[in-house]
Length: 485
Image 1: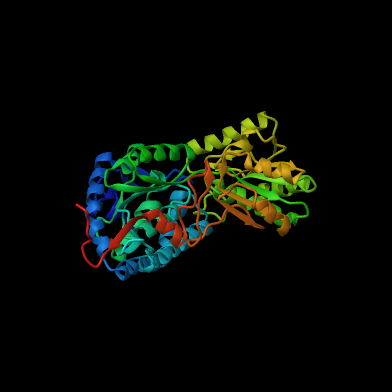
Image 2 (image 1 turned 120 degrees about the vertical axis):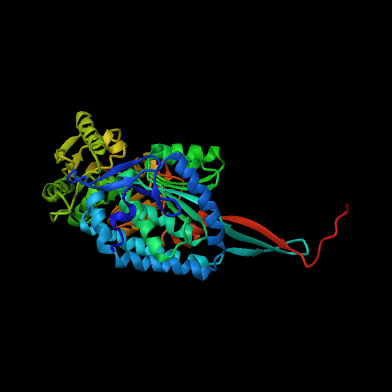
């Protein structure tokens, strides 16, 4: 039997095993063709409450296991991602519209996340404190309890596993709510991998659903931490609900990341970096290059080179054709992309390439000569659109980069000395010198500032332990203390 044998999960969710969801079922769609790939169980708010109760019970036993036992499950999970990579990649290509290289990146990263997480159970979980009393004093890390993970459609596997793996490794139970548009590759795959890896029943629950399920996994009384990746608008609602219920929320939100091309930069390489940054996975990445700042000495040639790349990049069904870009996830998202492109031209921008679509396939698009308040430059597009403007002065450039509400990622191409000076002044969770804006590694802290979220909450032992544990103060005396009462 294959890992994702449909008879196991068809029309089901997972709460202590595969069961019928009380909200019914929905079709699993292939955006490139409109074909139905299967049927998915849909959870209700009541299902979430049942799952949270079961998770709280299972978590106590899971946290009590020896560190080496939890580590072994994570290591086995890492191996399983590699063993079943081809099957999982097929779902990423068909359900999420990923090209094969992007699908391969997701399964590779999933394995890396699990192997990194496998080190967390044996990582130091506290410190010895000084004390003015005659006692020992410790600060130690304890599992938070039940963690809710809410993940989006664009990198459905990576953006689920990067929270699920460390949360489990540190002794928590997890309620996973994937985006219903990609709930097989972003949900069923994780459930099946951890089942095969030996994770006890109830420690991980799979709860696909809509906004009501999202609200429920935040509000369930047993949940102590919420890890959310998605749009800024949705993240604000999650943060507000978590605060109302006195829960910690780690919010990794939208972006409008800037790519800076410095004077004297290698033009062909800069245009290649810019194309990758804006067009990778149809621009449906929070770190996508949303603003190209190009020095006036290179501006015209850069726009021409970027436009030529846009016109020659192959677009089509990644399951049947050798393409660089696949489909937009759905008609709603495509409509939003096209609306912004047309509004930007109406506001004075120049359409240098693209701006057309066929079905859900949107042509790589370059918009030039944009004012800073142009919709394409101001807003997150989440599509294969490269908005370009020119600059002349470095001081002015830094102010323009920082003027946007988002602060997720910045790429700087050109002279390293000047780039380092700029890096110290831009407001961004990540800065990449002589690279474009899209980058992530399992051992590196990830997050943004401003409207891009609440800081680096994923990646590496320090960030993951901070995210998914609570600090407890513990003191010990050799005998009962004397008190004046």
